[in-house]
Length: 300
Image 1 (cartoon, rainbow, N blue to C red):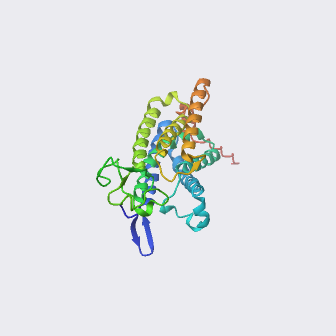
Image 2 (cartoon, rainbow, N blue to C red; image 1 turned 90 degrees about the vertical axis):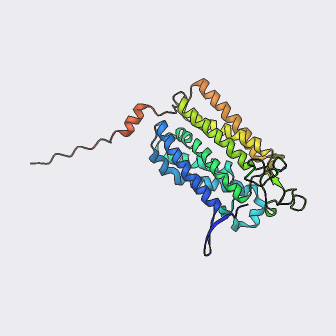
Image 3 (cartoon, rainbow, N blue to C red; image 1 turned 30 degrees about the horizontal axis):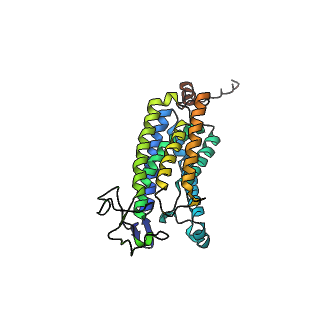
């Protein structure tokens, strides 16, 4: 198990979780800049909107998590801003990120759906990297497993040790399930692997089939992929936030998958949508300098 505090500078502490999330944002942004070039958009717009998208994404992620554990946070409101200790919800982050993209693209008059496509693979890469934070904070694990008898990470992805203080609310107390000899299913590792596969598939689809796709298709495929992954893994997760006995993230995953798949099929049958790859004439118009006003003639 890793100390969640990476460095201490007097009273200040730098957490691994924060380092990992910051790294995920930066590396994902670099990928997004590359994808922007593939579809004909300006990477400068991506960098310009990044801060807004990160802020709205973090707010959405934290709101989702706080609602999940409202009984705790309502009694401890000062803990709500402490995201460095973990506690963000990916569905909330995605919703918040979409809000940020919408606000920026609408204010600049650029194609919102195409920018959602650009951010889709970047989001998957960010999730792949960001899940390392769950390892450090001992989050997102499943039930005990006997598939591997040695300590994580030597037996990845079969088992990970979870400290007693991170098992609150679970049936696996440290007496019956000793910390030294009990390993748990590391769902974060499975999600990392599945999201990496999804990232490769999505990038291939954009590069290989981009000219035949509509703007927004990659975002819809992302929703379908992540919805399926999250639905699968939620069946093993502990301390789920449930609605009618079903994990909330599973509801979100299933509904998102069905709606995204239905809209993807329907819009292609109808031929609705602008092209994913920005047309050459639009690129030329963007690259052309604005006409300069003619100076007024002055008397000689």
